[in-house]
Length: 288
Image (cartoon, rainbow, N blue to C red):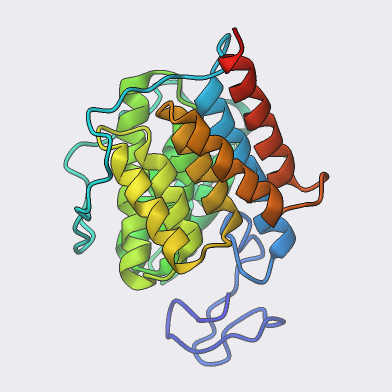
C-alpha cells in the first residue's frame, strides 16, 4: 500500500502506521488485493484464472461447449462507463448460514464495527472481507468488498471487487446465476478502467467475464482492444484463442493459440501448457 486511505499521504513500505495522521496499516493488508510489486502472487492469480476459463470452456463430460452467437462480426459499441452506483438488481447470496469458527470470528468483527466511533470502520470491514475469503464465502465477501469500493472509490478496492465476483462466477454452476454474478464483476472492472483505462490485465478479465453474459461478443471487442495496444499480452492472446474456440472458429483459434506458444516458448510455462491443452482438445473434438 503506497497511499494512506485516511489522509492521502504516501506510506513507506516498512511503516506500520501513517506518519501524518497515525492510521494503522493492517497486518493483513494485501492478503487478497493484487499488487504490481508481487509478481509471484500475480502469476498465481493469472494461472488460477486461466484454469477457470478452461473449466468454463469444457465443463464436465464435454471437450468443447459450442456457443452459437447471433452475430459473426464484433460490434464496435462500447459499454458506457459512468459513476459507480449500487446495482439495481442484487446477486442473491447463498442462504447457507455461517457456522463454527467462521461465524464466531465474523460475529466479533460485526460487534467491533457496530461499536466503532472512529475511522477504523473501513479497516474492520476489510478484515471481514479477508476472513470471509479465507472461509470460502466469496458471495458475502464480494458484496462487502463492493460496499467498501463504493465508499473509498479506490482503484485497488474496485479491482478486488471485480476479482471476488469473478472467482464467485467461475464456481457457480447455474447459468442464470452465473450471468448475474458476471455482470457485477464487469461493473466493478468498468470502474477500474474509468480510473485507469490502460489497465490491460483488468480489461482482459472483464472481457472473459462478458462470455457469461447476454453480450458475449463485447468480450471479443474488449480483448481486441488489449491486443491492439499490447500485441504480446499473453493472457489476452490466450483468452482470444479461447473465445474463438468457444464460437466454433476452430482454425482461427488454433492460429491464435500458436501465437501464445511463440510468445511463451517454455513448455513448462503455464500459458504454454494451457494453450497446448486447449489445442489438443480442439483437435480431438474435430477428429471423426
